[in-house]
Amino acid sequence: MRKNILIGICVVLVAGFVAVGLIAYKAVNGGIWIGDYKCMFVPSEKKVHLREYRGNSQEITIPTEILGFRVKAVSDIYDTATIEKIIIPKEIEYIDITGNENLKEVVFEEGTTKVNGFITECENISNITFPDSLENMSCAFFGAKALEDVTIPQGVTYITFNAFPDTAFEKNHSSDQYYVVGDGVLLFYNGQPDEIVIPEGVKQFTWSIYPGVSADVKRIYISDTVECADLVIRKDTEVLFGTNEVDGLDPEYIEGTLVAPEGSYIEQFCKENGVDFRVMTEDEEADLQQKTESADGIVYQE
Image 1 (cartoon, helix red, strand yellow):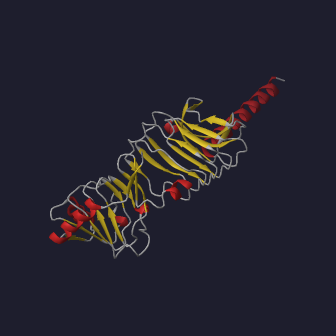
Image 2 (cartoon, helix red, strand yellow):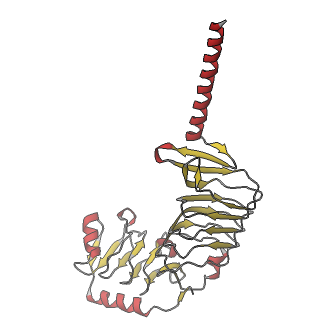
Image 3 (cartoon, helix red, strand yellow):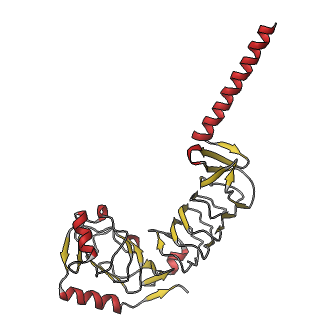
């Protein structure tokens, strides 16, 4: 009798351990439902990734902690029948929200300094709120067709490429040759396709503001005020720089020629990274200054 009882206890314990093990495995690899969120835990980092939402609220605030684990990222919140507004706390490191047709508003809480990820094909978003604390916008909002306007905080120094494609916001500024936001960030460019001039006052821009993926661009003139430039430069394109130091250049995406004064930061960059370089002539230096200082059609967001 005792033997049978002990065997029964052992069976129950083993079954319990197996069940706990399976739950732990799913929690780390596939995710488990805790409340309204499907959670995938990262024990080594003491973080959790929210993968799905099954609630029925019209407004949700993403939690910052679940079972003592800090929420790291949010993704796969799509096809929800009720969510119209999402509030994203400053602790969230990455977001990926796709195809949520009911979503109308996204709010990033005060204290957020960087937003990273994608909010795509949410066609009815009409309002995105960024806090004054924001500095880096590495998040793209694809296909938010109802988004007419976005206020970019003055402290923003970086915006990723293709931040607002296929939005009403982008279309509303299609007639602006230059549309500058934040702390000197060139968000939209609608100038000549063959000769690009980045005017004085611009501090940061990315290759997506000009048609850099086409063969039309022959020359790009970059002013001395530019501090960061993410460029894709084709083989037959020349890019003229001043003596300024420019962050963001990646030799992997530079096939053309960089032109700058002798002894400049750009010359040293090219030598260290095997990028084609030639010294700027006096006429080119004067031309660069004239073009970047006299450019007109610049619109600054109020």
